[in-house]
Image: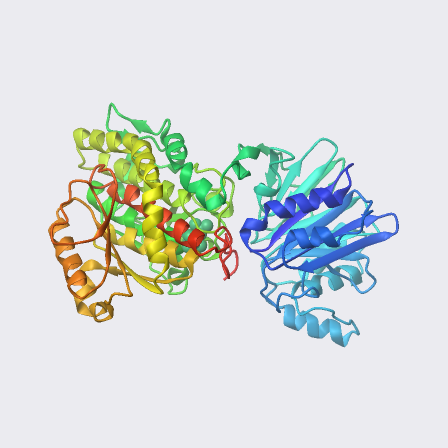
Length: 606
Ligand code: F6R
């Protein structure tokens, strides 16, 4: 999705902006642009395509130490140079970059056109540039405030005005915006990834907050012009966390680092003596935890699928009814919010609009909501009543991998804690803790088989269409397997409950349509094997993602073995070969693994 960067300081702004935009490339975009205020007004350069094309189009000399930049993911109007940001006022004085959607843009445009303004783009953003330039108010700050009074919608904006060339004014409402504090320089970005090379001192602006930013510092204030006096916090993201290192792709890097990141996530959170989890960030006492009679999990896409796994973990370990639902649907059905339900919002980015709206709806109705979120300080993390940070480190590839594994671990910790304040015994708690402690080594053992999995992936990549099947704990694994595969390989991949095959989809089984079957070593192994046999009997090739103890017998399948952990935790390990299958299929097909077509890293609009 769209990305914003801004710079005010002592260095030439253009290289800082280009570097920041490059850091935001992973979010998905189709055009890029920047504007730098120089001695003779501002220079605006925009290009369709990659940031490197924008960089190549910049003039050799581009002096100026104040500027804004943007990567655009088309919403209003196609991906053209005219629609790329920054958008400027008619006199070229005011430039604006904007993330979000201005809901009343059409009405504002009509009004401005009636007043004689000529528009040069199809975007909603351009209205802002004209409103700010035409505002009767005094300085830039006042004019931005006045313009925003006319606007309904979501935004993160950064504004540059050559009449005040030493500053930027920025505002946030529903789209993330962060200030980075340097030494006699200030940075602005919609994502910390664009800041980490320069500073670890940041301020996450709140909705309804603005800031005036100069090389000397910043001032934060509300729409009512009250100073908010925000002080910076320190972020822990290291530069190398967002560097590719020796890996060909971020997706490969992020899959490979899981043993280390999972070990890091567990540090300090396991209480082996009492067989429970330490989750102080939830802000819930044992008494409060005991009082919940239900758990409702909300997330989108892959986060929703891992939420289904979370619901099973909670039912198994805590014996509380738990259910996962797509946040994108939940928010639109006037949901019933119950006081004795614990709501859990799960999100890597913490910025997914559908999930954030669901959180707000729950809170509006007095519900208690905690977050399982990766990005520290993100919107969902801040709006929840408490939570569990996933600590997976930055995830750059659009297709989520390590964050999902961490979500699985987060749900296991939550289930353990909920279980131990109820009827889960110390011994069972300790068994789960031992399993959690083995996870890094088990994941590493799967990664050691990468070459063999890659060979299977190459075969699967040849199929136009595939099934992924699993049941109970294996079904979320199958759903996530299909999701990952289709996302990066563009092959049609459909997940089905193994038990449901015979109720319809079996009709589609044929030699050209392989099935990836999740067959854990558990109480359902025989039934899973019987279903795989049915697939084979109809000529469908099968790949079994299974445990070493499982004897495939009559099922003549390719097999991928993963180490056994505790039955409840097995799905977390079983998801890892699914990630490798998708990665290597896409690699074999020569696709843009980290930036699959049509997709964005965090979906901050509806
Ligand atoms: C799949 C994927 C998406 C996200 C979904 C939610 O690989 O990345 O399905 O899982 O858009 O995103 P977050 O977790 O940021 O809320």
